[in-house]
Length: 276
Length: 291
Image (cartoon, rainbow over all chains, first blue to last red; front, side):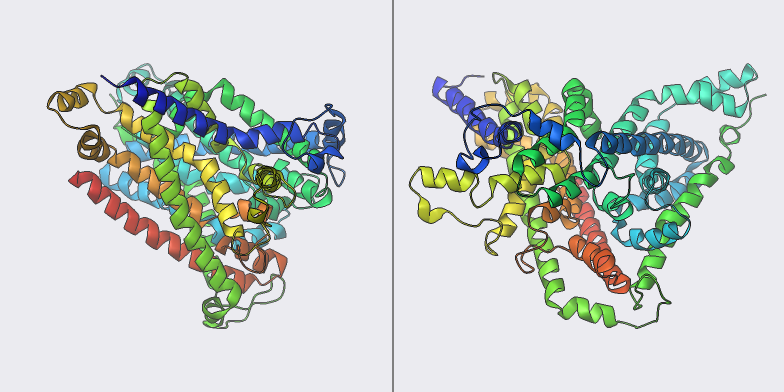
């Protein structure tokens, strides 16, 4: 395409200006966490005179006896547990929906997918009181159970779109070879679903890792508290010490940011897969 | 002999998932809906109080602020993140130096925890923080403000954080849409002498309809549920200036133990999400077919 050099430089300049604007929060995230306390508001804009790495050591200790390391481990347990159980439930269910005829399949599909739109703010109230009675508040298991329940619609939705396109040839071949139904699913179907399994893992993993509302309600003040709850408590205790807060915030963001930089192409594709 | 396909995936395999759906979605939904008509405090037996909670939801100051703010945030957030996202996508779709790095940068906030992001912005907006320091630095002392403590600016600060964090998501949707448009179509239009604006309006924009559907529908649901940003930045204040439906649900239920009243708020939020999403989907899908 023909374009005047003026228009081209205009575009580059515009892009650069926006990029700089977008970088501002990242800039502060990096520098404030390394500033000595006295310098934070004396010079809020500039670079620190000396780098205070001790902020990270102090932030790592966390609050209420839960270190940031422990909180990160809690987040990891809850996230991995939820992802695994959602993958299991979603893949099996979507397979059943796809193989059970038009009418039954459609009916079940809507039965599951309706759960995506309903905001869980309403269901969380009764779920909280019911789960409190059976000891599922304030621990990992409770959250894994809850997220598995809440994220089932999304995983059934994602898996269904894919399973429908799978031809039955492979299953038939496996059946001729005398494989059992369970074995056919495990050895033939599930491996074919790998691309969606990746998408489900990333989507559900991100939602659970970053979710705050439910974790605040279910884990507040508990030793099982996850990163968002820990950061929230941390800010409550050290609100005046922005360098510590920023160190804690940086620690909480670092794992997911590292994962993103490592797998950004696949991750963005996971988000936009449905758009043609 | 081969068994019919359905026999390979017996319905009984779906029973766990069906039970999960009944418990975590349908039963919980009905139970929550029932609480909305009671005075339950989370501990003692609930009494049926008819429409009392809803009367309060319609008349109390906190509820009206929450509803107004939620709608305000949703409308502006959806509009701005779509405008910026579409602009970024157009900018980054052509040949531009460093466009991959820029995509990675603009999308990065999307994967981060909204709570953590909001704390970073809380510092930027602080009274003696970078924005005010910068304004003073260039002699605009009169423009400095208590951004998060001023009822006129606090809600805009919340909006800025949401738009900064999620415009990249709209950008990704529109970029995916743009990549689906064949170059030949655009080249043909250029040869026919269509201006750039005309090419955008008559060819690109209509073909982006599926991307627009997602780009509008998803942020709408996010916007209606706004919670993390408000809790981190202002905790609903000053006064009720930044209260949203989700923050009120949390405060009424788990802060004050008014489970019934909180459930009424949640029912209003649910109804709002259902009505808005259904209308949107019908309109946007119809638009996709028409274009």
